[in-house]
Image 1 (cartoon, rainbow, N blue to C red):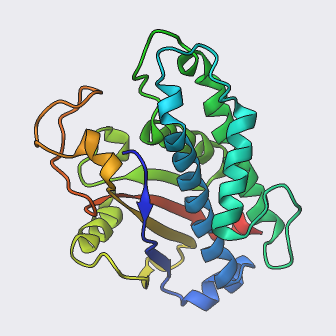
Image 2 (spheres, rainbow, N blue to C red):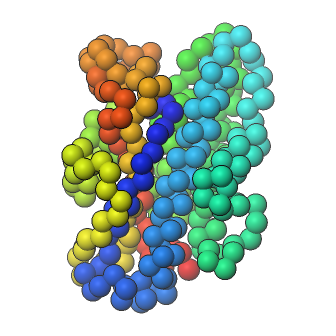
Length: 251
């Protein structure tokens, strides 16, 4: 998937003990927990957007050193994230953003920089066009690294995964199928098993015109990466960024 057009759908799941009670026991307000999950999804999406904006540079076969360093990537992400959310990742936590929230966001930014750093030999390879360092590849690598370190489960998921690791779990599949017919929902709250203190947020991703180079028609034709095209159209549901966050991770 290339340039990402988002319509934010918050699918929030709390313990059947009652949403306010669950958050209170964890020492986290409903706003803080939901906002943390939303910002994590937005930050991963922002990194994907920055990769997409630099895609023609990354895939330029005529250039060796591209100048798209981890530091350049970081500056672009910080600026775009600030524009989208009003949160400045270069500053200490504000009154309404607890330290735990900022720590998670900075950990995600660090993981994103590391993925870009490790991709430098590929990015700067001269004489090669398409390098398969695209938003989806970037997102999968970052999500895996961040999840392993933070205890927050972050993933990209879709009903037609090219990467088996992106296959939806039953809850994600149910939400994605619901989105196929109800793409403009805003917030939904439902219950989980008693005692579960994990909040789940899905932020949907919709195909834009640029995405159709790889995911459009004709369905079944091989795209530049060797995968079969899905036959999607602009505005179709592409998938979602899924966040499962323990409530005590925000403290």
